[in-house]
Amino acid sequence: MCLGIPGELVGTDEEHADLALVDVSGVRRRINVGLLADEDLKAGDWVLVHVGFALSKISESEAQAVLDYLEGLGQAYDDELDALRQSDIS
Image (cartoon, rainbow, N blue to C red; front, side, top):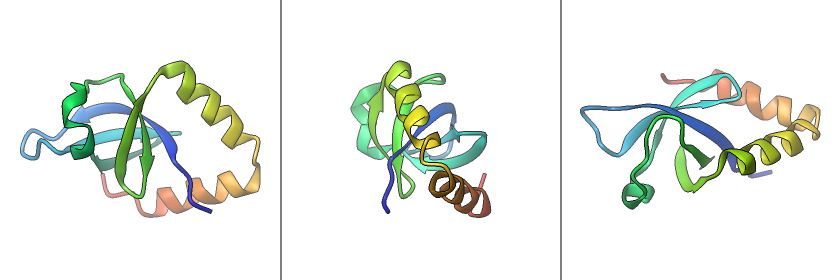
């Protein structure tokens, strides 16, 4: 299954404008935000993350709704988070 998972922007990479640090359900990871260069992203913004790329900026309420849904998937969501933790590069 391919999931887009909400992540909260927690920092930027001063050396690489197209990279940012997001928190995805407690896992911090660097992602590419280059597709959203025109969105004026800042700490506290939420983005939908898929395979290491921020695909869209979303509201906090939309992020929470998606996270609530994903948590309801049970083991499938837990497996996705475990995979994310194991690939953590931050």
